[in-house]
Every structure is written in C-alpha cells, then in structure tokens.
Image (cartoon, rainbow, N blue to C red; front, side, top):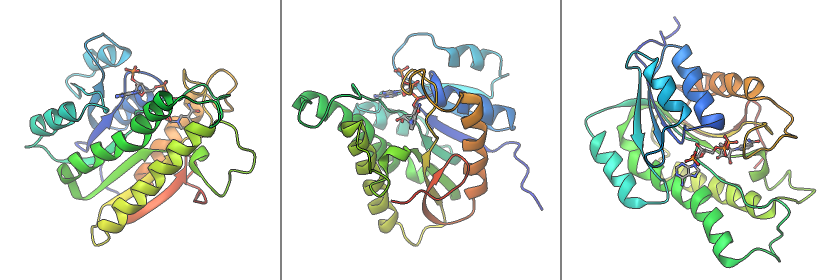
Length: 234
Ligand SMILES: NC(=O)c1ccc[n+]([C@@H]2O[C@H](COP(=O)([O-])OP(=O)(O)OC[C@H]3O[C@@H](n4cnc5c(N)ncnc54)[C@H](OP(=O)(O)O)[C@@H]3O)[C@@H](O)[C@H]2O)c1
C-alpha cells in the first residue's frame, strides 16, 4: 500500500531561490507541509509562495554559517517532528580559480558554507527527524572523487567531496538508525549558481530530485544518488 503523502512534513534549509525554492514548490504540489528557511529579513519568492499556500509553507530564518542561528531554529522547532530534513544551501566561488589562486579567506568561505555548515545543521536537527524519516543533503556530481578526471571548479569540488566524506562519517556513527540518508547530485542546472550553460532546466531536475528522495524513504543508510536515482561513484 502506498503511503499517502498528505500531512508529511519537510524541513528544507535554503529555499529563497534556485533549486531550494523549486523543491519547496514541488513538495507542496505533492501534498507535503514545508518549513523552509531563508537568510535575513529580505522578502523572497518563497514569501510569495508561502502566502499562497494556505499555511502549508512556514518560513524560518537561518544562515547556516551562524551556529547561534542553527541553535535558535532547533529550539523553535524542538516540539516538532519532520519526515524529511533536506539541507540545500550552498555557494560557489569563481569556477576558474585553481587551488593555486584561491585566497585563504575564499577557501574558508566555500569550505565553511558547503561542508562544515550543512553538517552542523544535520547534527543539530537530526533528532527532530522521525525515526523512519529521511535526511538529505545537496551535494553535487562534482563531489565525486572517482569522476574527477577533468578537474575544474577545484575549490567547489573539494567542498562537496568534503561534505560527502563528513556525511559518510556521520552515517557510520549512526549505522543502527533506520533513517534513510541521501547525498544528492541534482545535475548541472541553470540557476544563479549553475549559470546559463547548465545542461538542465530547474523543471528537468527538481521533480526528479524529489521523486528520488521519496523513493529512498524507508531504506536505512547513506546513498550518493543523482537526480534520476542513479548511484554516483564516491
Ligand atoms: N545549479 C547546479 O548546477 C548545481 C549542481 C550541483 C549542486 N548544486 C547545489 O545545489 C544547491 C543549490 O544551488 P542552486 O543552484 O539552487 O544555487 P542558488 O540559486 O545560488 O541558490 C543557493 C541557495 O542557497 C542559499 N544559501 C547560500 N548560502 C547560505 C547560507 N550561508 N545560509 C543559508 N542559505 C544559504 C541561498 O540563499 P540566499 O538567497 O540568501 O543567498 C539560496 O537559497 C547548492 O548546495 C549547490 O551547491 C547546484
């Protein structure tokens, strides 16, 4: 018997625009209630979507690089349980910059945002995910060490490879848990981050990302999957 999607709850981190915004929209379409985060006080597309959602999208504020904001979100949501936590927030730097060019400050900025901070969010919010729920983190195909035969985007790649390794360590520490864990490679998508040359539109990626996450439910352990549900080599 299929599980009805109604009244399932998603906690989505980083949904002001791009893939995160589209994920909020897609989960809403599929009958889920969504608590989604933005940075700062500025009005975003997500606010417009929330206003039209009859209360099914709630907005929280979180900059994932600020531990006190992660703690505050954790406290505000402590009485709730989510069927899925998905950490989407991420950044890139100048893709042409090699490891020989990058400043220490820029290296730290990318690593802290893409590797350390998503894991801090997972660590802090893991126990408000249902015991049979799903924890997903937005990785990238660029995080695959095996597939890195042509280099490029060196710092960004390294940050996603670090994220993957940290998530593997986290999964190893929780090996007896029933929660499904997914590192997601959404494809190269035309967003602010992906740029105009991306292979996929948001519409070609995000509904598939969501279907892949839903298909992973109920399967304990960590998998590195692309948007079509294919295994990505570590
Ligand atoms: N597009 C692609 O081709 C592609 C491919 C592989 C993986 N990804 C990954 O997919 C995720 C989303 O990318 P995108 O293409 O949708 O990029 P995007 O359009 O630039 O959106 C990035 C999102 O992350 C949020 N964010 C960035 N830093 C944050 C922080 N410190 N705290 C909280 N939120 C933060 C942004 O919020 P603000 O609006 O406040 O900046 C925005 O909502 C990223 O993790 C990215 O690495 C993208």
